[in-house]
Image (cartoon, rainbow, N blue to C red):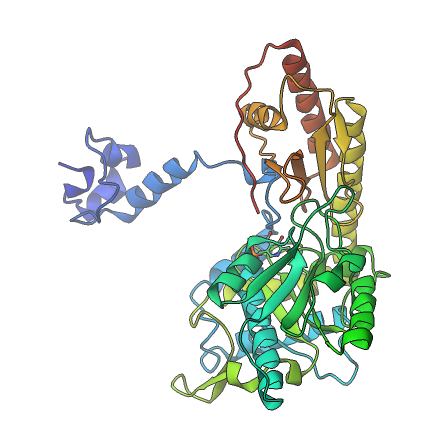
Length: 459
Ligand SMILES: Cc1ncc(COP(=O)(O)O)c(C=O)c1O
């Protein structure tokens, strides 16, 4: 009989130590809903105990997603946990904060001063990418239809280093993905290779700030110039969507001089993850369009059954409002200077760590953390008795999670380790990591540590 079939007397909760309730020889059924109820303390404790087996967020160098917020922010998020972002009539102030965030972001991304930019929050960059991709698709179709041209077989051009959300967009919405492959020394989309990929059925080009594969920024301005050239030669006027999942909230503070945003005329839309360098816990992304004309009307639905008539453009209907509140908190709490201080700190730690990794002697740095605070490195070609997968595996025993993976086409033979630095990862932790990497490399060099090849690439 499972543990929860005890009929718990409410008094037990007051008088019995929690583990006397849970310390039964039976355990909960895991894959069926229990037939009876459990008292709240026991239920919460059972789950909390099981979750102890999860990794330590701070030691997870695989993820780009925020793993630490101030206690004040956490309280605000908890207080807003019951707010549904879609109920804008019921929660007008949450809706107001969302709209202020859109304005703040459009200013950060240098939207035209005429104030025409439009945008919304999403659950993350993946949803934002779907919406931006749909806008490109619908716009392309409408323009072709106006000229009585065939509207089938659209394609989207991007580097093969794109995050999986773009592959999903193409699969879900029947768009041909045209991936520009990697080549030695070219792990991102470069302008000179574009002409062979663009034609009259190209709905847009995705440029990434920065690449999930190695943290490097794609040269948006140069890509735009190449597209200007293509337009002059072929008449194909192809616009850019910038996937700024990570860089959208990083570059404005650390490399404000790089022109990648609405300063580049050809950029019609941009997405970013509030939950990455926007510094909010998972569950918020943003997508903005330069001008309402870049967001076709048919994609915006009007609903009136929540009270008021609300325009909605999203894949989900209901979704959490708390993260949007958390985003606004970070904007006013940190301000421009605060974001710059936090991100410059991460940038310094990433470049410090990259330099130390380079000094170990067995690694070759591929990037050094000077774009995003993210870098990748490989083993030198003459190291053949162990792999980066072995190193990733051996660091797990300390709690470190460093993903090891191979690059996509045409660099499948290059296997790398990636380190992502986020707010809260300081130099002391960096020094600890270095000493553990050194120890493990020495063991592998001496052949005293077993190899265990396995891929652990995380997005
Ligand atoms: C470049 C890029 N685009 C899109 C995504 C997807 O973002 P999200 O996890 O917010 O859906 C990621 C995630 O790592 C990314 O790095």
